Amino acid sequence: MNNIYIPFPTEQNSIGGPQTFMRNLQKGLNKLDYHYNSSTNNADGMFFPISADLKKIKSIKKQGGKIIQRLDGIFYPSKHGKKFIKQNKSIKKIYCDLADYIIFQSDYSKQQVFTMFGEKDTADYSLICNGADTDIFFPDQNLSSIERSDIIKFITTGNFRNPDMLDPVITAMDMLKTKGYNFELEVIGPITTPARDYILAKEYIKNYKTTSQNTIAEALRKSHIYIYSHLNPPCPNSVIEAIASGLPVVGFDSGSMRELCHFNSDLLAYVSDEIFQKYQDFEPVKLFDKLELAINNFSSYKTIAIAHCQEYTLEKCIAGYIKIFDSIQPDFTLKPGFFRKFFPGK
Image (cartoon, rainbow, N blue to C red):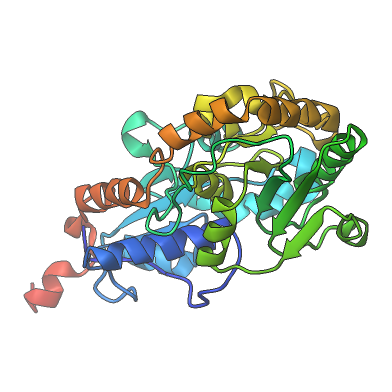
């Protein structure tokens, strides 16, 4: 079904997981010269992340087209409070009543949605993990050890808008400082958390607001260890890019992190066994323990990371989506007035 309508974002520098994914998808499809529609006109189907204009969806459904919805994280009460029902309304409507096929970006994402919205038959969904552009994100093979005289170079990337994304990291960093470690933490991306001024005052912090993939990739290659703190992440592009760059990833065992970092999951700090974890269960001291583990065994973890740097490539990701686009066919028999259009008077 390569006559599919895909509403790609018009702002190329927009920030966020879905926007990053859509830019990568468009780049991958264009590279393969894969045809897709930029409008609903004559489209046999529609693909979009999370939610879309219900009028457009219903219009395509009415003419027999198929709807493919890609889901990552959804809203839930422990993080979003009472407003989660309203926030999920259109997403759930599409998932339950309008979508013909669902793509989850991780098994954890599937667990979230199945718990909140209900399960789907296995024939009606697939799991396709995000992928990094390995022409941009690739390892520095020479950076394989940390000597005692070295400044340990930590890095984290993203759009830092919630306390869970930086506050526990800073507390763990302060613990490292107390124990005499010599390090710096490069934070790439905007910081808008309430503790922003406190964080930027730390002498070991370097903050760059760039969203350029090439700049981020270069910074990753010059770093030793990637740190990621996020509550219940469905499939973070930031982690995918760090893995593609051959970095050991230290973080909390939350959301899809164990799935993505299965090859070095012992660098993930335990949180809880709940599907929807709570920020109160993020213990910085446990993150500190994992950072020490990564530092003291860096050569080993770096070797493992390099061996898995091709785990999540954009090529694999795009191939998965094309396979689905091509396999789901429109049902023209559903189109009202189909015969009248081509055979007037019938």
